[in-house]
Length: 113
Length: 154
Image 1 (cartoon, helix red, strand yellow):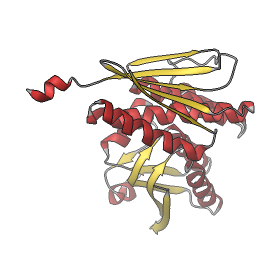
Image 2: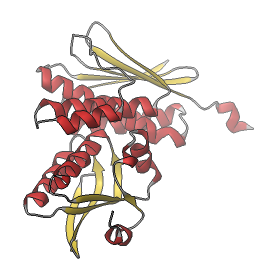
Image 3: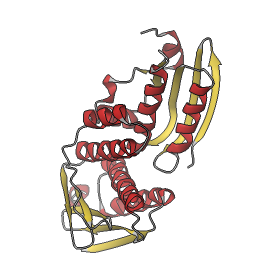
């Protein structure tokens, strides 16, 4: 399965809905999308990963890169994920301490810190 | 010892194929369903790393994946064609990857961070892991237990 991306605004947040597989082949598309959003002035991003079937370290690297970019503008990057197999990858790499991970988009939108 | 071997050009699009083949063969060999996700992820990480090494070093040889069903273990070997031994170790941490990513000027550091993060994921996932090299280049060996068919008959 390829990668699907769609974006929508919720208040001052921009939600990026990701579906499919994020790997060495598809991660560049996600990177482009995040770079484009930041360049357009969207600094508070929520990446909804509920539709993601597979995530590897290349995808993690893209998310870390996105976080760096929004932080340069005092922005934020929050993740929405409930899938144990995806959460496990964040735990293994210690990235649960780096990304705020929420159970729903509503929860991520409401979060402030 | 039943084996399946796969050789593919160092293209990111083929990594998914390698993942699918490895998971299918692992399932057929009797690897427990609960760890197939780990097998898929670990093989993907090893293959992504090999593809990156081939591209960065201008290596034209294919990436090698060997899947071997032993008596009690399922062995996966992913070989790259980069002759010099790679200095990175399995204990590379994600923190190191992050610091590399943070310090990256947008050039090689990002790739190095991806590489380190990939090894961090593999070492976090796989209990039986050896990172070494053979005559052709670097090689990552990983294995998982095969469920005993006798257990199913009980």
